[in-house]
Image (cartoon, rainbow, N blue to C red):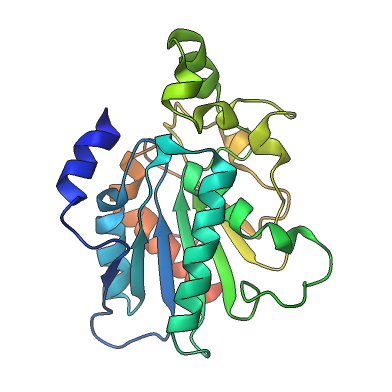
Length: 240
């Protein structure tokens, strides 16, 4: 599987992998979270671009087939809590997630689904401010339904795959809908895995459709620029 191939490349690296800002430090840290059947290195090009804009970047890695979305989300939350404790308390932390990675973020920040900010939580604004979702199946993916119907024991082989089933009552659609964060959503016009309808989230602050495919958009300079613009200015640039 593609996940296994990428993991062999990454196995000797220290993950999460840190990329230091180049040039003037903009004073923000960004955590990149990859999607299903991929691993950290696929986010490296996006990370390098963000570094060139002055961001400190951490690329978070996990084995997507080994657990459910809720299980992965709990581990992501633990990592973010440790990162927040290690960084200066005044340094904001943002997240950029591709595909299923966005659903992990919804789980990790599930406490932000309430109207009021919870007490005794460190993963809250103003420390955590932005979340950019790139091709995230917020209402699931028909491709997940397809592969579950075609692969014998698919739910055992890829434990997160059943969580990606499509529909209003599908697991992905019932995850916490986050408030209090500034949420930007990027969709790809040639994405055969996640439809535009499924990419939307009712609490999104901005949405943009870009040219690209589901995974190919991670290697798009245009997409990287839009991510940077949202993190810096709270919106995408719709006039490029």
